[in-house]
Image (tube, rainbow, N blue to C red; front, top):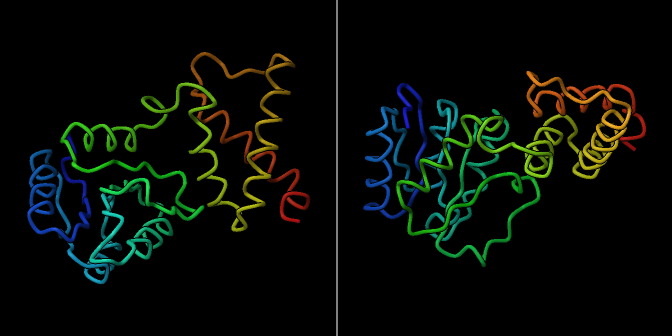
Length: 195
């Protein structure tokens, strides 16, 4: 995994684990921001981050304010936790990958590879594309219900197109084709989607 020059924010309240994660990213060539041991310290780095790995629980406080700041800037991030079953994930973060502790370098590398190239490594069919399409729709439509309506109408439009013989060209990536359909549906059906 080559992350030369990428600024990765590491948010972890366990000092030793934070150092280990930071060392891993430095070994890939990344510039590590932090590690931040508190939510407030992490918020100071969000404007510079190009990617992030966020422990869900920072000293008893959810890391969601940091994730919100990154989401506003469209910075990709990965959550991780030692108590995955206890996570009450807000709807706006359902698209984000969650890695379970203890972290292995291969888990982190795989998650960041999928973030860096979702079209090639994560999105091989529409079912696997759905979380990315939902996340993108939520960036376009602030209301979560409206965003889900946009996804539903986009999938219906994609099915109609395929049945009509208008499938993506062999050289065209599925993600690009679906995002284009999503934009078309939003411009055509905005009034119905936003109500």
